[in-house]
Amino acid sequence: MAALTVWRHPKPRNVAGRCIGHTDVSVNPRKIKRLAHRIRRAARQQKLPRVVWTSPLQRSFLVGRCLARWGWQHHVDARLSEMNFGAWDGLRWSEIGVEAVDLWCADFAAHAPGGGESVSQVLARCHSIWAEFSATQKPLSVVGHAGWISALNWLLANGDALPSAAQWPGSAPYNSAHRCPFSPKPHELA
Image 1 (cartoon, rainbow, N blue to C red):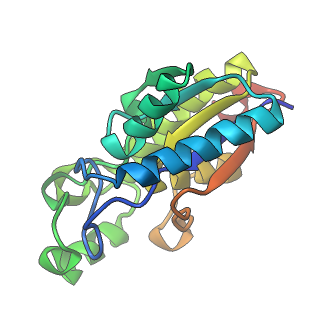
Image 2 (image 1 turned 90 degrees about the vertical axis):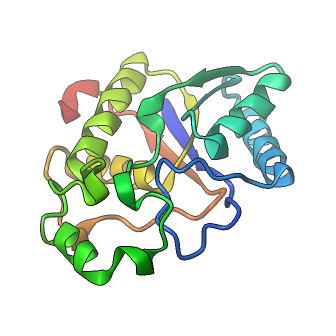
């Protein structure tokens, strides 16, 4: 069965304790190349096409660019980006404060933290690109972000139901691979 293989990008520099969404943080070039090698090796072993999709954020994009230098097709789609935390983006969680986070958690799916993007908006983006990918029924590789991967995991397990903060899937580890088989009926999530 065809599947989407989603790899979480390598760990960026100087992100500990910070809210990172659309903030375009840097990654050690060796870590970028190391993940690109792992993706290339996995594609060879599984006989996958040499095609990768990434977000425009450099922690994802640069892995795709590295693979493109090795002859891969590299597609960039903003729907694969991490959640936009608006005014929170790039701040230390301690600067945002517990009260603001509690307000978000109280209305987790609908509240747009920092005036950015709500979880339901991330789920809608994720659903949109998943529907396109699954309609092709072709194996694909994606370099994604923790929030986007969590959104995909939620959609695949729960369809259109909206999550509470307590239900939201945990973050995927850096450099990890997640294989998501396409449904035999791509419209199941519609």
